[in-house]
Amino acid sequence: MGGLVLVVGLVGVLLGAGAFDGGDGGDRSGGGSVREGEATAGTPPPPAEPSPSSFGRTQRYADGVEVTVSEPVPFTPTAAAAGHTAGHRAVTMSVTVRNGSGARLDLAVVTVLARDGAGRELGRVFDATPDLGIGLAGSVAPGKRAVAAYGFDVPPGSGSGSSVLDVEVRIGFDRPPLLWTGTAP
Image (tube, rainbow, N blue to C red; front, side):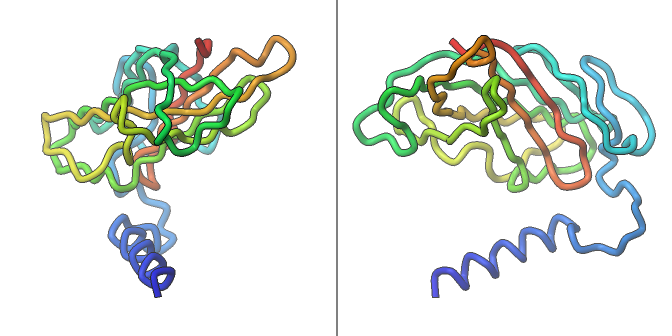
């Protein structure tokens, strides 16, 4: 029964976000393409690898929505933490979304992913300290911002790419992903 409720809820979120709207290809979000530090106009470019930004830098969508990912910092998970494996490094970072658009921004469709230098997707760490809960949720009014902490479990790696950390943030289904890259502490 719980699984059915979860599926129905997910379909409701997808319907509300317009994921099943017709194939007109139009840009319903006004999101457009992205460039670090400045807005661009028009519809999203054809799918391409977005250029990554350094941690701490702000990236902006054409509709004025801005996203910043802070420098990752190490932390020691508590005994009650979920998602941490002994021998892995735990890092946390803040993701800030500022709504510079003229409409309320739904944060239920925000995804934050991280990969190490070997391209392995990192697991999320959930912990009461340092307040690593579900992440961004709810919505943000125009001119306001929302901030949430995200924790990731970085496995030990081999080679020079093991200290690289790539973070991808996607807001909604119509906006291209934003990328940050740097060194895992």
